[in-house]
Image (tube, rainbow, N blue to C red; front, side):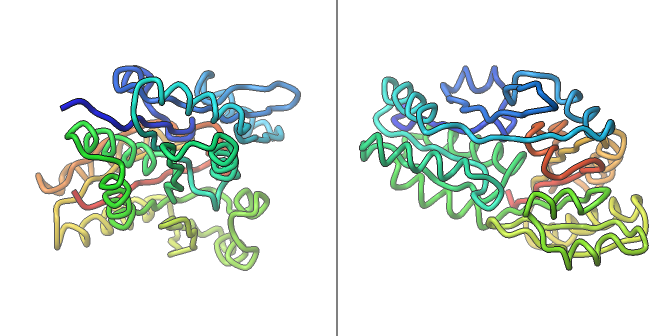
Length: 280
């Protein structure tokens, strides 16, 4: 059965370009400003942003314009009857607002803009599941209901070296940052349905890995689990975590997604390591 619903995502989803091309997904890019140099998210080596943070350079990001989204709408409507546009959580960026404004200007009832209420691997997971769902012949109304079920089942847990980056970008309260930074504890944060909270504190990086593994174990008590691992500059720890979760047995599916989008790196800072957890 021919798929009738197209998909648009923004560049923070970290969507594989070959997969996006094969599945006819349009990626709308955000921009990254490092010093006086402007970069298009998803088109340059993310290590550039990481090195800039290590060097103490200021990094700014900007959302796509409504005009860019409207071009994406046009492109998708040439191929599909309906279009689903997914953006990173509106609590993290104005990208959702830009897409919504574009929809208002575009005035086409076949365009549907939805806040993913997540980011990085969470967004990628939702996008891929939606493509699979629509490939099965489902219509947009069914898809929107299915998307809500998917969002309810998953959450993102991550740690960073210092919470000040999140505070400076307005993503976390100063009180939470103070609690997380005292005595050099490692903060563990959970991002679920667009809400970011300081969930736990541990004394070492190794304890972060243990905590994440334990969270997977808890979920496995009821259903099979899927885990996707992302990081900023923690590739070794990410591989250690992948190995530990893999050893939990065949009821868990674990994937190492790699370095997060430079836009996301700029907002969470160095030391970022996270997992998207969801029931299969």
